[in-house]
Length: 149
Image 1: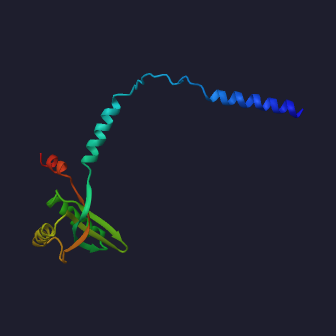
Image 2: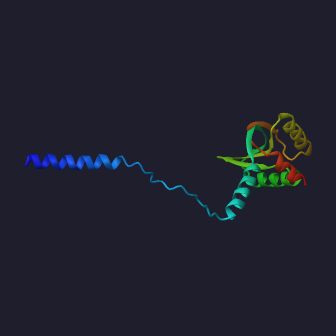
């Protein structure tokens, strides 16, 4: 019985070992054909365009125009700012119990000071206008060129 089992194991072992030594290559060389939708190229192009025109953020300054709990007053001043300076953005931040009205995205402080002087001379608010350091939105050069056209 042990002899038969030993012979069976020996036969199986030799078949397995000889099966691994096959010298013929089983890989057939050929070519791959990719069929893709041409709309994918158009989509990739649009995505690249969108990403290149997106807004970037940077350290800069905003003007703290008003901090009040009178919502109607804040909204009226916001409307006046948007009418007078449509090229700048106006931000409203609610910090209980006050609404803070912030103005502009200025990368450099002299530009923020110039707008502060314009706003104080316009006398939109009776209180002081403060220059606050914040992370602001910076438009890419491509975006600026398209807005000017």
